[in-house]
Image (cartoon, rainbow, N blue to C red; front, side):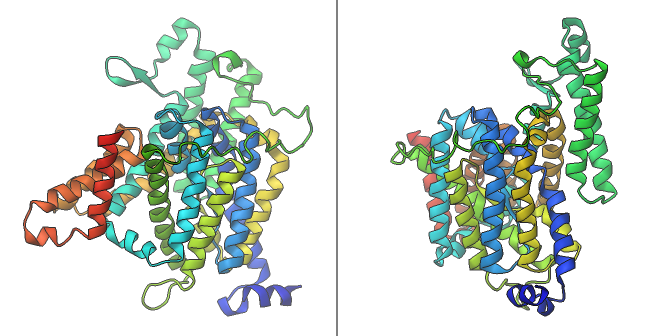
Length: 460
């Protein structure tokens, strides 16, 4: 068996073995498995069935990673994007008013276009057209967007008519009798945030998943002690897993093949699909380069052989996500932990994918995890992504101002696409009128992208 696996995955050629790859795959699963708890929580805000989303999440992780492993033999794992699922739920559906079925159609269309781009040189033209500082700003902005969603889901940040947003009032919750639901949830979120932060600072493997589980267990203790009192009508369900149906896998029927293409000719729909595409493209290429360098998979020129296959794998996974009922996928940055354990081939990815498939039988556990336990994961993943802001060149206003508008636009407008739009339009606008040398920085593709976004504001 080991010889067959070596022949299939070229283990010796990359200086690894079956045991190392399997252990690396297990490590990658532990670090990335939090998406099984977070993704249903985020996507169900649209009205989607959380059980169906859970099953779809596990299947997308398995099938997408399987495709990636077979096409590339790289140790990369595909999971639903924790930025694009937020855009899907909170911007496209709750913000813009589209149905989740229409949003799924945009996901599928994005996957098709992504596949076509992966087969042509247009992939490189679009990616290279965006200035480096804007690429950093997009990553940082998505991090801030995820962070504010995590803070909102935790209950710590609430809406305020006077100041737009405000912090949760513990004295107020004690006065109105909501401390045993909303109040204790915020306390547990803060405790979980500190615990997860400590685990991350100490480089504990699986720190995010461990943080979620520890916070959830503390919540269960509070429920058993009477500090947390379930109130489903107010959105505070019991924290105890419901095993009344055994370990049956939740049906995927509520979300399977529910894509609605009736708005495909609308400009707004096309802009949404374009925003999914643009974000997926930048996220995928950047992550592949970063993980590829960590796994010593780049050549002497810094290029990754077989990157087209990796891009194709990402696009196929996204199309699968649209069909099954899920958000667009991305290459999980958390699998860097598996690469650090020595994972170098598709066998590591395949191991992680199989573990995601088996996790479907643990749905009562993952679906019982509350939002206050998953919110710290969103905030801390957001903090990791936001670190890209340090790479922006703030010494050049023609670069820093568009970058700033891009990354602050996402959380303040509560939309990834608005941040990208502000960044691209301002970049073209500022550099166009700052002399010949600045105009040289604007590629023809940037003019096209700016025109598309301006057209969006004029017509929508």
